[in-house]
Structure formats: C-alpha cells, structure tokens
Image (cartoon, rainbow, N blue to C red; front, side, top):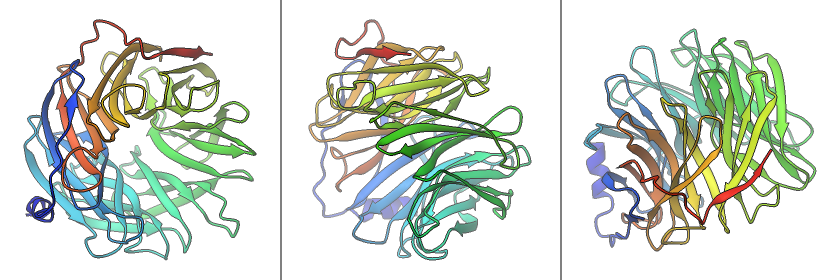
Length: 405
C-alpha cells in the first residue's frame, strides 16, 4: 500500500530516463523510489531470510519540513516485498542506517524533528519484521543532534553514533548512545576537543567493543578521527590521520576478519587534484598501516565500502573524472591489503548520479544504492540496482595511485 503511494504521488510529473552503464558492467534490474522532491538510499543490508533491506528518505527539501523516512525489503531478483514510509506530515524524518536484530526485527538510526526536544534530534527505532515501528526515541535538545550509524552490541542492544551541538558555541562533539533491544537508552557519552568532532560510522569489534570513525578539526585542518571504545563506552585509544591545511573525510568503515580497520572516503590533502579517493588502514591497536590516495584528474569521492568474502573491499561513490554526466556513480575495488586495483566502472546519465551504498553478492554481482537526477520524476530520485561484476580485464588509465604512505 505504501509503495503504491510512492508511485501515485508522482503522477503528472514528466519522467526523466537517461541512465546507463559504461559497458564494463550490466544493470540486471533497478528499483526506483521517487517523490517530487529529493530522495536518497543511504544503506543496504542482507537479511537472514536471504533478502535485502534498504533505508533512506523521500521528499527532502531543506526549505520545507516533511521528509519521510523510507525502509524497503526486496528479493535478490529485484521484487519488492514491502516498502514503508514513516513520518508523513510530521516534520523531518530520515533513516540513515539499519541493522537486523537477533529476532529478525530491524533497528534503525537517523534523525527527526517530529518527536524529541526541539531542533533536529538523533533518532532510533525498532521495527517489526515487515517494517512497522514498535518503539522510537529521539535524543538531544533544542540544537542539532544526529545519528549517522547504528551497530549491534553483544548483549542484543545497539550503539548509535553521530554528533551533538550541545553547547552555546555550537561546537560539535562525537555522540554515542547505547540502547537496549527494546530501544530504551542505557547510556550516553560525548567525546571531543576544542573544535568540531563528529562520528560518521561505527562497527563492533570481536572483543565486544567498537571502533568509530569521523572527523576532527584543528584550525584549518579537517582530519580523519578513529576512536576505539570498550563495551561501556570508555575510550581505549584514539588516532587522527591527515595533513596540515587539508580536508580528509571518511565515508565508510570496515573491520577485517583479522581485526584491521579500514576507512575509505575522500581528501583534498596530499596534493589531491580537487578531491581524491582515500583509503586508510589501521592495525587493531590503532597504528597506521597504510594511507593510499587514488583517483583521476577531477573530483572523486568514496561514499561507502564493503569487504567481500575474499577480503577485497568494494567502493562506490561519485566521480567527475569519468562517465556521462556532471557526477557519475562509480564502482571500484581495493585488494586485501587496502591497495587500489585500478579498475573503475561508472553508471549514470547526462545529469548527476551519486552512489551511496554497496553490497557484494556471492555470485560476484553487486547491489548499489544511489540517487540520480536522470531517473524518476523529481530532482534527485533514489534507486537500488543489481549489476553484474565489472570486467576487470584492464585498469582504467583515467585513475591511478597518487600516494602510498
């Protein structure tokens, strides 16, 4: 019923359709989630029953206040099982990350103005196996508080990670909130220095703790921040990676089976062209193992990564160095050491397209979440597509390694 609403809301708008691959990979199927305003997919996960769930939002307009959070379940063949919108008519609601619970429910993190304490608040919800809200909570005050990721804890609860602007200077601090499996807050902690610090992603570690990555500011620098915490949120170690005068942004976080930590994103440091792709690999104890910078002649940004069963890390994001439009979705890969393999595949049309989520499949194909100006009826329309494994028979001369440290 909700999915029909998504379709019906766009009747009367002129449909745009100019979306292809560069030929190195074939689009097997595509699901579009559209409204007259902006729509994004932010995260995709596999579910225990062999299907998949994607989350994001619909109907975004920064001058208005009726964003709808989106959750959708679909099969490996691209058939929608169900789609739910939450928060219609109630303010700003966005799902940013999702995880499946031990009993096949869903826990989501994001932000809201519909409930809470004023302004934008960090948000969590526990949803039924078919996408309906059981329990939801908002965390924050009248300023800006946001959850950008959620990770499962060993006790069946979850950690929300994000940031809070909790003082009069509007300085951002890292925000961590532990909730139980019923969605009730158990503890809340902040971390930060004299300038802005924020968490973007968090992952559990095998010892029951967590590693988070985000950004920290020092004068004109924005560096990548890593923090390891134990189960009760106590800081174990902290690492910062960056250079003077540059901006370094992590946009994904992966933990290898051997405990190595990898954040991929983009950087204007290290003599980048505009922004180059970046992959930082740490030891489990926080020491830097590898910093690799790679990209083309223009702006290239990693937005999400995922390690496959062989230890290779797949990346998606958006590029101006190749493709058919202003920005194009790209797929590329790092080997098991965190080194760029040189292959790049693009998808998109004459306008802009942005990759935001990636999930490798057992047959070598990929699920990609994105938003595009070349499909649908609105301005930026959300999509999930399954693509065949790209043809990695040769490297792309437009992209190369620029620095290894």
